[in-house]
Amino acid sequence: MNSPAVEVLTFGEAMLSLQTEGPLGAGGTARTTVAGAEFNVAVGMARLGHRVSWAGRTGRDEPGRLILRTLRGEGVETSHATMDPQAPTGAMLRERRVADLARVHYWRSGSAASRQQPEDLAPALEAGARILHLTGITCALGEGPLAAVRTAAAYAAEHGWTVTLDVNHRTRLWSQEAATTALRPLLPYVDVVIASDDELPLLFAAPGTSPERGEADLIAELSGRASEKSSSNAVRTAPTCTSPGRPRCARPPARCRSPTPSVRATPSAPGTCPA
Image (cartoon, rainbow, N blue to C red):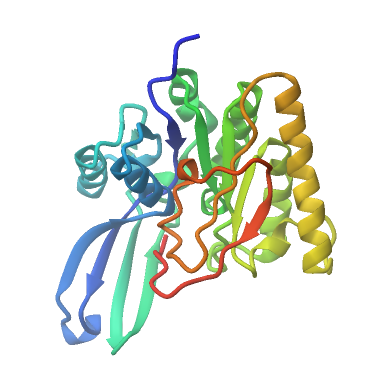
């Protein structure tokens, strides 16, 4: 069997990011960059020498072109990214208020990424990969993105890929209950869970479960999936990936290997990348 063209496939919302050195109302100068959880992972993996494809959706506008140009400049494959002619690229503003205190504003409602559909991913999935990296942020953007995540996860699991899920809970996007309802059904397809201490309970089967019991049950679920894959000779044992104490954007899934699947809580750290 021929090796896939890329090792890692990911998709999700990448946004135009404006960062000011002072309050916007006081005329603070803004610096333009790009933000997004999956964007960060794609760039990080490419910098580590891996072949990566980003198949997200942007608007057919200047911010969208900036995002794709930035990804290509980092060596990330973007041939399966799509551009929406009717919806804008999302944006965020990180406004420095006082010293290290910052306020973040988002413009994501109705964005191109919130309109992503499962069919948008078909070419990227058919092209193949070894690892599919997903985050809870994409699931929170709307029914279309959630359906895309579910379709991609099922396809990847069926074809023997390693599936990683970064819970990456954002309270501005959805409630804990909504996150649990959406993310729990993904677990049968997932090999690696990445979560902070406060995010991990979102995946527990029963509300109020103790951290010890919940983590043990979660490990059992992932172990069962790893056993099924091993018995079908589809892939090697699933990796585990955590980087305690490091920013969320610095957790490349393909660099971490473990002989048995497990779940680790990753402590939140100052400087966590917004998305």
